[in-house]
Length: 291
Ligand code: HMG
Ligand code: MG
Figure (cartoon, rainbow, N blue to C red):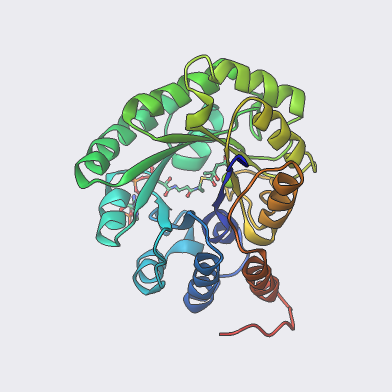
């Protein structure tokens, strides 16, 4: 039997959070609806964060209210604190993600607190998610390198990932936030993390600044990971990670996985339509894609 790999689509969140202009809500919904039809098991739709920090996703509640939900798809959102969690729950999110870091400097820039403080903020979110029956995912950013403080100790990644696992995250996504990780460094980091968290509970989240994202996926596959984040059209940067380019493109990831004999279950014709929609969002684009 072909081994299944989960492709976790993060474009509507990680992609659109750093667009120069505000993407109209109707376009975001059209994109998510196309992705739903393409058969993703997980779509990260938006974030319930401060609109002062990320104005691009200030329409999170409207997006969640108006998407056409597909059976078999979980709609996930980022929740940095309890306030975000309450809003996500009210919006009917199937899954919420807490997002921390292995770098103190990045933690301060991204969520305005230390790593230890962030874990204190996440703990009540984890409890509330469990009580509400909402799945909890965790992110660790800067798993290899931080844009502010340089190389990151693999043990710091391991410790944050372990803390999230202990809080009840079913999966922890390991973020190469600035997309510069070399596969050898990714391997060293994964070897440290799997000492505490099993590979089946880890996902790879590789931005593709240096063009090595697929090499990092290959290393992670060899380590036993079977879940990877990617963004339609290669969208995505982090607003608090200068220099970060797009996420690994979903189409490239699927092609790579299929070449290696893995099965993803995604309809690539519908995915191509979603990519065309993304292209039409580019400033100055003449592309006409409904609506
Ligand atoms: P803060 O300023 O320290 O917190 O921000 P605060 O509690 O003092 O709140 C400040 C203001 O935000 C207040 O409003 C709050 O009410 C409001 P004011 O009184 O000034 O009018 N507020 C909120 N509003 C809506 N929803 C909320 C919420 N919480 C507070 N949930 C905070 C702390 C975490 C809120 C802020 O720093 C923030 O929102 N940061 C978001 C950063 C972010 O979204 N970054 C991008 C996602 S992470 C990423 O991309 C990496 C990833 O892809 C993996 C990888 O690549 O590595 C996941
Ligand atoms: Mg990211």
